[in-house]
Amino acid sequence: MPDFDAAIFDLDGTLLDSLGVWEKVDRNFLGARGFAVTPGYTAAMGAMSFEEGAEYTIRRYGLSETAEALISEWSGMVADEYAHTIRLKPGAREYLCCLKKQGVKLGVATALPEELYGPALKNNGVYGFFEAFASVCEVKRGKGFPDVYLLAAERLRTPPERCAAFEDVLPGIRGIRAAGMTAVGVYDPHSRGEENAIRAAADSYLHSWSEALFSSES
Image (tube, rainbow, N blue to C red; front, side, top):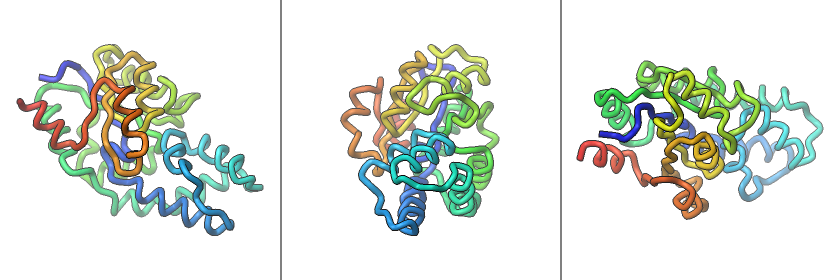
């Protein structure tokens, strides 16, 4: 049996195989403005809310546009992908089902706004698996901080020390640890450059959801 009462999941790159979509958005968005995607940009954006990411992009590339304009453009570029195309990572659905059968509460802590994560989870048939949702846009700080994970735990009515949270990026793992939760790193090809650092910072590490499923059933 899992040694936690609630499991809180990041979405992009953790449950959802979606970061390739954001790489394409970054290439197209910045390319239209005469820039190439600089190293680490997409990974850094993955831990931020849309507002934080827009302000970061404006600073990093010296853009004259407003944060609101960037957010609107990005949302338009990815809305159809989240509603119809993006899929769960292999084994993710089975692991969620396994946890539910064992009485573990499931929650989401994501940088995505509801208008993107809702359609994606519904299209994959797992929206109803989750008892609570928390988005970085609802709190003051991004995923390098505990805020969004603590909000998810509060909505799950579970003490942080009885929660495990799953993330694929290093700032997320640091935020989970700061929240006093068990931090589980999850491999994603787009964050493989941080794998050693994630392994060092996390309590445990999964290379695939099939690995997690095997562990929970053994």
